[in-house]
Image 1: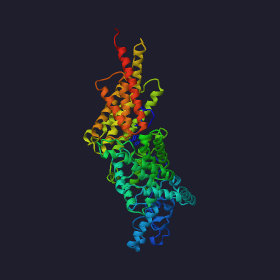
Image 2: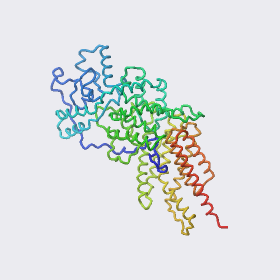
Image 3: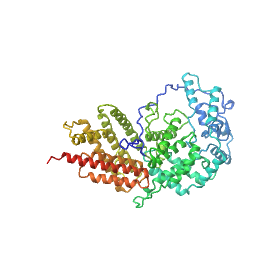
Image 4: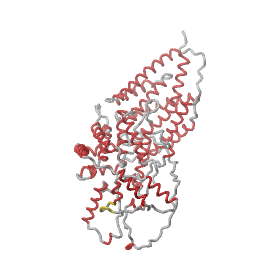
Length: 597
């Protein structure tokens, strides 16, 4: 559902709404010319350039100078993850002793911040941020000039490395960081909160590589000299995960009768907020992930305030980091590409920024990558893909809605209605809520898929519903002798809107019966609010036998979710006030319809 201050026009959700741009394939205007593999003219032993180069320098055909075992000067200056080939022809002649090899690996890990597990730290892989260098490389290839070798290009790389190099923390920053690290929860609690965040809080989002994060948490707690213990970006990310995971702990004990009015994740959030100033200017994925998760965490408390600020920062940092671009960096493996694209679509779908033109987004939608797919604890890639397709339709609905607002007549919605029906028919059988056990972590994610499906129908019909209600009330309450001519199309759309609200409230009744509800689900609160509001407006004209029961359930559900949340309580008061207006209008309309005595 879309972020908006207007309850009828949609609210932000913990469910993403990206645009379906899979058909916008990347079409670079400069194509890399094909080359034939040529035999070396100089024998290995007589070569002056070292044959052992790291993967990044090798991909860019840059000079690679190893400043210390396991890391080159270029990667060290740019704070990049430096990866060398396992075997080196020259060094294989004098194999390194096992002890030396261990020392070398530890030294390389400590200097780059990479974890021992496959050395796949994506956060340390600090970009692609060499945008100008990449452009010059492709330009030279287009002009058949070969790889970059000029001193100007190398000077530019060194200059940019100096600009992006993080400064050494001050003594005050080090003391603050140590104090926060010392206050971390015990390992068992930390791992539990990470587990809950992944299992319950991920929904149809993607926050981070789950396998990598779990491994890093283990390293953090088991190795006191681990570089992660001195990395403010990782510490801040861990705290945000603890905070968000705390919101969803009630789902690990469903049916718990007592409702806590305090926010169990507030302490972690306050600590993370202290570190935001230290990491906000850092390049890399972690600072983006921190902003995204903080934005999601703050949605129940302040959706159009603090949450909006943090998710906005996540979007702008993602744009600056080129997550919206389909990278052609040869040093980036498939796993890292997939992490980047999933993170981008999660951010974009949450914000749905109208200011970001679809033409500049070239990164494809999430894909099923077996090596990555099978290692995630909560594998929701199919949900991400299905939701991305739905978001594409929702964006077109929003475009149509703006057209309707500015035009004197209703635009044709047949195409949009057909697209929604086709989307529904294309869903796999695994997305049938009746076949998913409520305790399954997929249940709520699939529930939110259907919630947004019915929300799309509400958006398309809400203006027609209001128009029909106003015209009917005006005809009967103003003693208007003119016939009430309501367009057939408007009548049909208003009925579709009312029907969708009824379906949506039924979804919430089913969810309530499972016991797997939580007051910190912003999507649930806003979805139930919208469904109840539409039901009240439609109830001005017609009330079936189940009307009062549906309204009573909707308000009770909202009151329970608003416990301890002043902003949510204001929302409940609004719905209650609207109920009074609906009842008053219904009474007057009923009396006007009665024959005179």
